[in-house]
Image 1 (cartoon, protein in one colour):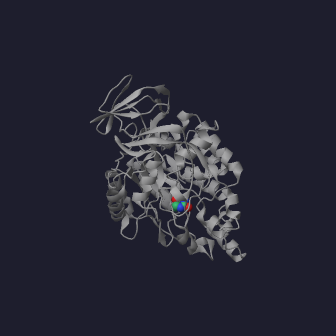
Image 2 (tube, rainbow, N blue to C red; image 1 turned 90 degrees about the vertical axis):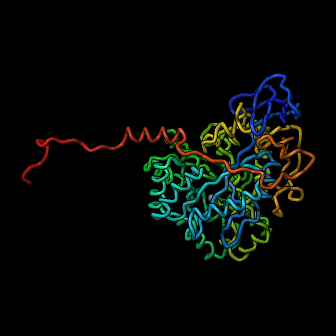
Image 3 (cartoon, rainbow, N blue to C red; image 1 turned 90 degrees about the horizontal axis):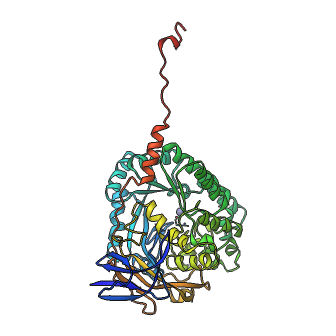
Length: 485
Ligand SMILES: NC(=O)NCCC(=O)O
Ligand SMILES: [Zn+2]
């Protein structure tokens, strides 16, 4: 049974044009005028864009003494209802190592996911076992490894561990990802505010100032340069971190930066709210910043110095947040956004003229597909690409509210935001998984793991350049050597 999407305007990262799209099975079969198929999907007065890819989620993540409450089932339903057709989640190894953790993630995702998915593997320690497991992880179709410079005493890795892992990534053709905050300074500042008698969530922000993020971002970039590997900085929240990325890119370094929709639209005043729960629900790392940082992030997306907008969807219930009632250090870090990333970015970005529609597609889908080496299977509207598509209706609108969201969390950090632009339909590999007004949940378990090959073009180019410019021994003849000393 074929499908044809008719009457819409295709918006790709590089151009906008009117055409029909014929889908056969899971893929786009043809793009052109007056196409016909067995069923017709109406896209009149709408845009057709590649499905969103959210490269930063933590579904059912064990973290800070609890487990993120958003499940793979609810999280991926939330994703497709907001136009996102693929998520990339972080596998966090426990005592039994990377491969055992990968099995755990696989068990949850294969049973529950209704969108396609992939994983990043976290490197939270260093050993010969990890060195060897990294190759096996790459063989399983995972080409990205995440490093935490924060969460001292838990997930944090030191510079020597990070350097070793980055070198391993270079050899394997993989991309290191970094949570860049100086964990030593954060730990010291946390203690300072506890000692000063400030145990509330506002101290979460005080203990993680932008300088701490800027320093770590710069350090991660320099370590990656020394290791000869590109690097991707997750949740870039401030000018200091953006500046380090901009500077490095101007020098020709291969660095990518990912702001979150939360940091683009919410600010630090949230932590001053007299309602403890309001502030605690917004505790995440890095914290929301002073509004001036938002201008820097928006400018980076328009200028190309930042490439991807993600969510870092790590959603804990209000009850879970009370773990830190007496001590902000125990509030589980994380917020949600999977359902809202595309509508909020459209409303605050495209509707305001900060982003073009093509830039919107680039930062929600195409750029990350290229970075993850899955383009043009994903992130593209081309014959042969997976039919992961959103029929985006710019006239549909809603006010975001926890009361009608697909996420199972009992609140929403965007509560009350009015958004214009919503998916009329979301298609995942040719299946209509979301239809506005119907509210039907797609089949849990229909989502598929997306394999990602190592050695994307950027890794290949950088390896070549590092080889050409590598320091070499100077050849000296005997007459230039000291004798008799
Ligand atoms: N971001 C956050 O606060 N929680 C999720 C874990 C992480 O990415 O740091
Ligand atoms: Zn992080």
